[in-house]
Length: 289
Length: 334
Image (tube, rainbow over all chains, first blue to last red; front, side, top):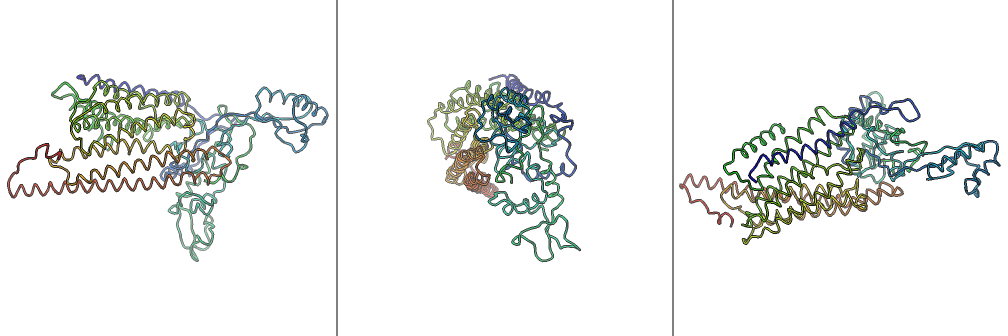
């Protein structure tokens, strides 16, 4: 090749095309996104983080938490269920409605409400069931539920969407799950004391945890007149000596504030769900980082 | 500082390119020339859009994916291939089989390489992930063209231990391309999302391709700059085997570990602590591989320090005894 100019133009063109496609176009498509109302309400989502949590995001980044934890819930699909909530006054009509809907009546469906009447049916069939039951004087609701292993683990009620990251100064999605997903850790573990103990001694809080302890985020000091309010309550094996206490540094408090702010638990237009099982009810095996 | 340094490097490379005496350019010059211009652009884009004036929300992930692909696949690819296309024919004492194939490789890396960094799990518009998947398939074309070109560059000379580094690097690049396409396109490969197998890809590209070829390039150029052979050719061979073992150990352990890791991740009945057990052995093997890599680096350092020492002694001796005749190329190669 004798023409360096042609070579340079080729390179420039290739770079320009990928730059325009992967940087400019997403910016045009998503760059102007703003807070949006939560489905069925007037609250706007996502709200800006409090100052301490914003600082905690920097601690999260500085300690490389995103190398082991993702912050993106994966959703594989959507299921539509019918939840039976009230029998009403005419039980015979409700039983007839069940027959009309072709439902199995063997297990006395009028007790133990609310209960799932139909699971993973089409939207049309769910709406027909809701109307048929309403005509019989009973009440039911159609539940839209996100599906996938992440939901089954209780890591979220819906998949993560672009709007969830609107208030992040640094978006740290993580690409490997050596620890659980943290997109909703603030919902699953709302107790700051739990997080502080877990950062100090992960293996003590979660048996078999592979997470390293972050003890440099704490300081051991002599108890002043009375123990500090946020001094760690530790088992005897980890407790400091007589007259000493372990207290979190500002970085530890900020990191916990950030972790508690991680919650994408509201339905949005682009990520709908209605009244699914709460994440707190999910298996405790999957809750702890 | 890094940006300013890269701009200066790019400008000096560009001026050298534009003021060259011979109009004809060797394929390695195409790759190296473009590589030097690449970094200032991608680095300034990432710096401005992620640090100085960060773009909003999830669009940062697009910038990050774009930068990652351009850095690891395009930039390191261009520089590594520049070394390959220069050193391999010289070591084999042969002419490169096809300049056209080399040009195809160049254009292919430029066109397809920058698109493969975006994981489709990221909540960005679906078309971006879809294009990324297609591009991982297209990226196999320039990789295969490189393999073909180098295989058909047949020489008669005994190529020496440095050639092993380049051959291994190209093999790592080929395996990287195939595994990347597997994880992105094949449904069972998608189960490797969020697993340690993703790190196997980085190991193959950064250590296996760029790192090993960088070492080969250093072993190629040092005796030529110094004007004398490396003091311990045996250490070069040993370094190759240690570096190759390190890369193979890390890549195999991480990729193989990705399957049980992924299988347990998608089974919600498996407690997360059990998920962690699936990848622990991979992480331990990776630590062993990294230790081997460091050991190899120490061998390299020993060889280079001995070379510098020999040079210094030679200069002192020259000052004392007067100039000695320069070694011939055959002596250097020996």
